[in-house]
Image (cartoon, rainbow, N blue to C red):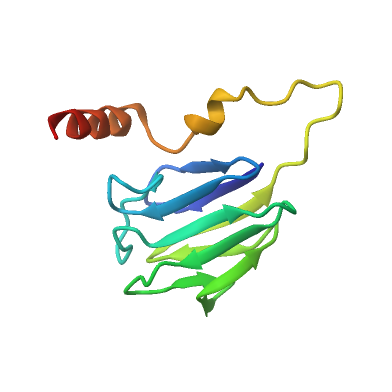
Length: 134
């Protein structure tokens, strides 16, 4: 599992988790998987993909202000533990959580369809209300 943590003294820390095989988007819009409220972030800013070999890849989705890895603007990049991913003014630290030991239970499958840490309960409720209003 990959973990991205926000770095901001002005706002509470946010933690985003991406499970093996996961594909998640980052942006301001309610349609993004990881919703962030930060200056210069596009509605759907970038996509994070855990590749079959376990590597994490980021792809800029034609955002206005770009996606940066360790200070360099990228269209697509492979991320490593310790990298700094910047979308707009939001900076995230990338870490890879080691695989659980064989005797430890793996994460429940429900987390893949309902990712933990991606949205607060109030954000999930707001998204559900908007979807049901359609």
